[in-house]
Image 1 (cartoon, one colour):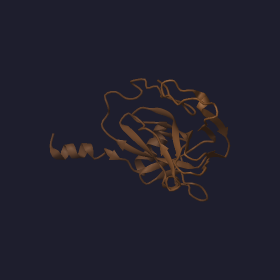
Image 2 (tube, helix red, strand yellow; image 1 turned 120 degrees about the vertical axis):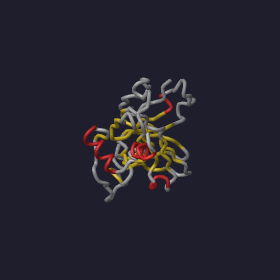
Image 3 (cartoon, one colour; image 1 turned 90 degrees about the vertical axis):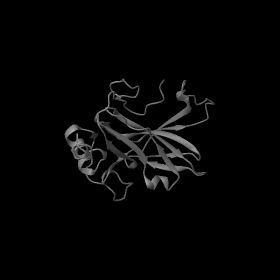
Image 4 (tube, rainbow, N blue to C red; image 1 turned 45 degrees about the vertical axis):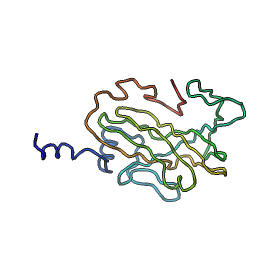
Length: 195
């Protein structure tokens, strides 16, 4: 294969633009529901941007609490570590943590991986959103880990932007998340740690 042929083959790889995201969302249902433009007026923005997709958080929250005196153990997770809340917003206590989930259901193509990062509006308020990479052929609602790093309570608004997905395309992997029957495949709702 010539250098030019190899270059042509690789030209479709890398960070994907709004055109690619729109095509996959509409024709392959990669993102449901899909908002084709960025919604910004009066809300923390969500929808399609130049090189990503801004996700919304639903009105279901699980906030860490110490009222039940449990220990956070990823191998033996006690659901009593949380207080469940539902509503148009959630208050996360100072230096605390909550789980939420995306409104959007994601279906990753086999030849793509997504990185989910917090929005700058959140980061500038000391609110950090952490999500591990969204692997090839994974699907489900994304469980969002939200940390309030400030000494003050913070407010998270349901049905508004919380994080952005960046999509990267590569050659097909040998073994996708679906192939290995990953433990978080097709998760619905806020999913707690599993072993």
